[in-house]
Each structure stands twice: as structure tokens, then as C-alpha cells.
Length: 285
Image (cartoon, rainbow, N blue to C red; front, top):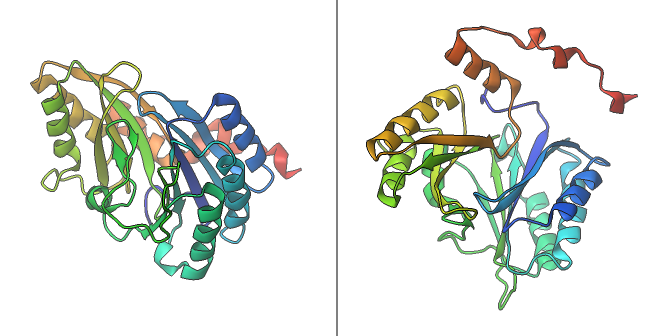
């Protein structure tokens, strides 16, 4: 099983770039609780984006996404790009018609071109083929043609990407020049890197111009987080810099954190030893 999977539900991650106003992100996060479980929601000015994730049943997630797209499309679409990562254990088995219907809905809500794709390759290769990859300063429109074009739109576009669950993390490379940033990304996400399940995207911080790598992990067992960051640190030192602050831009499975803990400290904790796994969920009452 994919190491980033949580359960056999859908996980939806919305990325909006440039970021949504904080009060809007809070409002959207609150509205999701009616039909799903919020996993993460925050703005990050290094990557110039908002990132929000929620979990819902496979039967219900479209009913959450459609009103969400209506809410954002009214007055917030202009000048922004939006990507909805629809994460399923078996995305290839999900039928085309509900996704096509959702794409048509978004076409009207955002008044923008809509791209639809299914990830059918490891995360490293997908970085070059996806319709809306991470660019230097936020989301960028790739080379794929939209499924639903829209002429003269104020919105840069909307992408629906069906994929197995992925984990997104940013890492700042302090004092690393542009050519060092590109080399560092190739070291962990290139064809010869050995990290087939890491998509590595070079970015420049919209906050202060620092070099930033956005990492998207398709499987943290095949390509562990801690080893990926260790290689980035080595590459940064080659160019007189260092690995700086890292931050999650998505949900993170508990197993991934425990694997990192084990590799860094030698402590082999299990989920049953984590207090939070024993706490009751008040929302179920």
C-alpha cells in the first residue's frame, strides 16, 4: 500500500496561488467541516500559495468540492491559479463521469480553463507532465491543453489532478544561488537521483527571494523524507549554503512522522504509543 495513504476515503488538497486572504481561508476551512474532516489549512508566503486539505468519503467529496468552488469563484478567481489534488487509493478505478461533471461545474464557477489529469507515473516523472506544476513563484500552467478551454479568463486556470495520496513539504536553501537550487532539485527529483517518488520543484521565495525547494512525496517508504532532506543539505553545502527551515504544506500520515523519528533518533515508536491516537473524537458524539 502507498505509504502516504490514510484510509480508503478521498483526500482533497486545494492549492490556490497567490494565497487567499487569511479570513477567506478560515471561512473555507470552517465550511468544510459540514461534509468532511479538515486536515490542514495555511498560507505560505515562500511558495506564494494557500494549501488546504480535507478528508471525506469517496461518495461525498464532490459534494464538498462543488460548493467550495462556488465560494472561491465569486470574486476570488481573478489573477489566481487553483489546483485540486484528488487523492484516492486507486485513482485509476474512479469513473470518468463524476470528474467530468465536476470539471464542468468548475468551468462555470471559476469562468476559467479547466485541466483534468490522472497521475499514472511516479512523482518524479509526474513533475514534468502534470498540467499545473509548482513554478518559480507559485503554481504554473504546464504544457497540457485544458479539457475545457475558456477564452479571455481573468483566472489563470483550474486543475483537477487524480492521484494516489501525496505529501507536500517545502525546504528553504539558505544562501544557495539559482544554479545551485536547480542542481539540488535534480539531486532529489531528477531522472538519475534515485528518489523516484519525489517531485522536486525549484522556487524563489515570494517573501524574501530565498531559494526554496517544494517536495512532493508519492511514497515516503521508497523515498523517505529524512533522507531526501539530508541530500538537499549536502547539495546546499556544495554551493556555500545550508538547508534552512522546512514546513509541511499538506496533511502528513502518522507513519511518516514515526519513520522520520526512527531514522533520526533510533526510537521505534508505534501508533499505539502516541497519546493522540487514544483520544476520543468529540465530533463523533
